[in-house]
Length: 613
Image 1 (tube, one colour):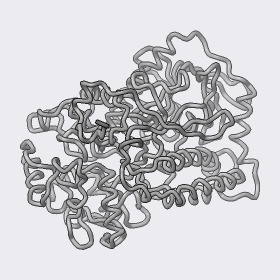
Image 2 (image 1 turned 30 degrees about the horizontal axis):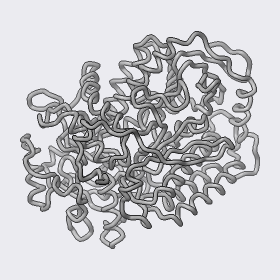
Image 3 (image 1 turned 180 degrees about the vertical axis):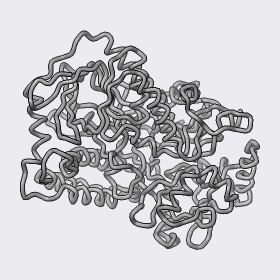
């Protein structure tokens, strides 16, 4: 590292990893193990990544809770949950490698919950045929990050905490580095790199009610798009069915699916266990028809026996449960504050505290509710984006050379809807693959490509521009209006009219964002950070709205009230692809993944594929 002038500092690393969550850490570890000099740049403090908020577990076919489980069943569940719009090649790699990544974590010191025989315990989650989620109480993500950081800090990587990356530099069709600024003191930094990995997580702060932390403003998605990379499936945003809805100060905070995996029951204001009324035809044979049958299933799991009866309907896929809660609200059967009641209090008090300690304390401290005695009030919250940067399934390289992506920033694995628990194993599997390939490519490159001084000057001017403006709006107000608009017009239920309005609203918000003036200096200035984040939030919101407007059907995380039925003949076979065209405008097209391998196709439910005779 050497200071070349008072304006910015230059750093040189073989591999730059942007993001320090599970995917970024796993990628950095793998790249370091393969001999690369690695820089990790994170927007927040190390250890504060959004991965720590993942509670329920990591999905992997270990077969500990039920020996019938294997990677083929996991593959089938992932494809079915994603409504067959997944990149089947990624689904195969994920299902085959997830178990090894969990075992690897254990060798690195992860302390998973154990079965009576001492094996890694696994719990039930929606859409999984067998208990498959390796977990540590309801704090799995925290243990995963702790383990990866403990491993990573000994690898010799350089960590740049509280930096925001503003631009990727390119030459001859491949990335050459990136520009970032220090959020604390406003200092400016240029990172020269042979390869770059984007592991920046999701975009859910674009909605007013979300489970995402403040970092989730979509900058990784935007960086790739601005660089010319292709983006896929941006209409598919998962609204987790159970977020806190009361009091207002905690609205959107996640209530883990582990509550339902441990026997939590959903009821409406009339006391009805309503999920029995919402089981889709494609799932009928797998789920209980009666409350007695559902409770028998839970009793067997609690007793440590193999499940021999059908699962409770609360464990349907997240899109189904979220829409069901929304439908109950529309029918006038919502809970007191507009959601549903989630009740685990019928289980033994000590078991609840043992299995769900985080949830017990979360409701006690934030809502003054004792979940061992009183139902929780829950409702849908923007939680995860299935869409993201399109990557090669075997290398994780994007359509821009030497630029890789992993975790929630990438797309392909989850199709139209992600199964709970697949995100943690996703970031382990594909973080490793991205790190391995980025290091291998970097090893074959001699020296660093010089970065154009004019381009550096341009991004510096763009970054400092908000500080030079006077008399404009507070950027926080524009952010607030953007989030409220997306909640109403591109949220869980969409229509052509609302989506067209959202596109117009985004243009107006973009004009307002261009004149915001945060005031103050570069030092500890959150208004400046928000003014800069708006450019990414606006573009990723536009991607979502554009893709949703074009997909004239309902499927997975995308629901069109004016097209409520899935269209299997066309939309069920193509994925959206968004990119910047030659004149700098956002364009969209639709493509199919390559035909699925016949042996893998035989694992899927033929009736659900809806193929022409």
